[in-house]
Length: 200
Image (cartoon, rainbow, N blue to C red; front, side, top):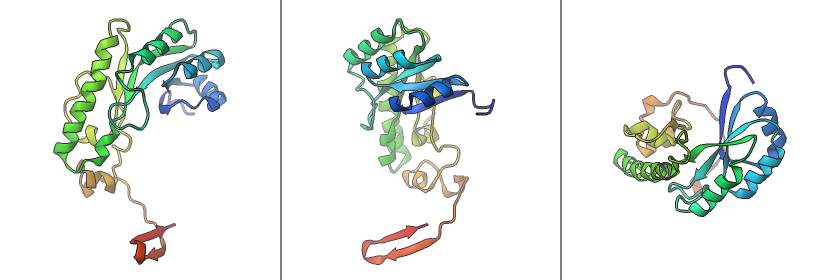
């Protein structure tokens, strides 16, 4: 790793089978991982060799990963378990409003964004008195492309915001002229009956 990449958040629930890689990376950079269970937190507490920060992953509407924001029982259990941890440090909550990818207009994206943002900011407010320095990390390219209101959000992580792609054009958060990278792919097969092409 170069000196330029010294703060990394792995924005996906931590894979405990990668503990050796986690330890190697944590020896070189400030590493943030996502935790969704007490069992994962306990595993990390026993096996970390270096300090690692963690965020609790919340499901803020896309239904892919994360705890339901109303699941205070599990959130509290994770926080209680890690309270005395030497190398595992709670820094906040993380959410991804991936449901914006179903939108097809700026108005739809903004509506979804406001609901998702309100959910994660509300959780922040519930825990901020106990953890005054906690952060909220939020990110999806459609929201970050069209929204202006990120009040209560401390960190943005829009995945392909810097480059865009044709999907982002279809969603309505950019134009073709905003796409920074294009790749030519040879077509190796055409299946008209399936309305399908195969690219190499």
